[in-house]
Image (tube, rainbow, N blue to C red; front, side, top):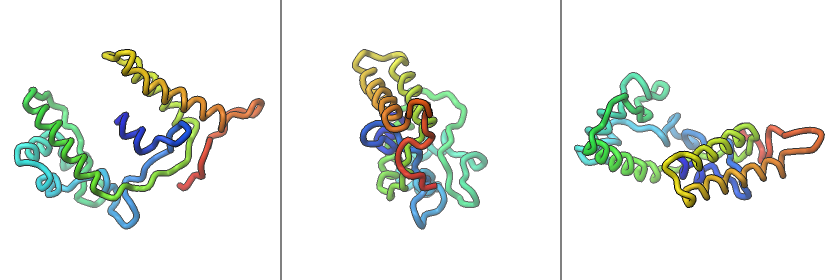
Length: 171
């Protein structure tokens, strides 16, 4: 999640954009992040497909609107080491398959409140065990860049912080 947030939502000069849509123009709602059973079965080996469907598929939770598309929803189960390996490989294969889809647009507005939460998350990541001083560098660097961007572009002495720090809200 951390690397995806940086890659997709990271703004040049620091900070993070507000959001990425769940689908592109002309696509079904949520199409980029959702799956139908046949897509999973086609993208994975039978063992991986069976494991993903068993542990991440729900006919009740995860469905999107009136479509047969589903967000993969982790079922509350414990996994043995072999299952974990199969799931990790299967999820990596699905991510590669998803990256072949056209990426939905990003709302290139920088919001003060969302970026404040991102700063907190980055600081928490840098402090979470097990970390080494090397592991802490990138999240702390990004937290500081984000804080600096908010202060430089969004803060006015005597007036306070703007809600929209940069960009045009396209929503």
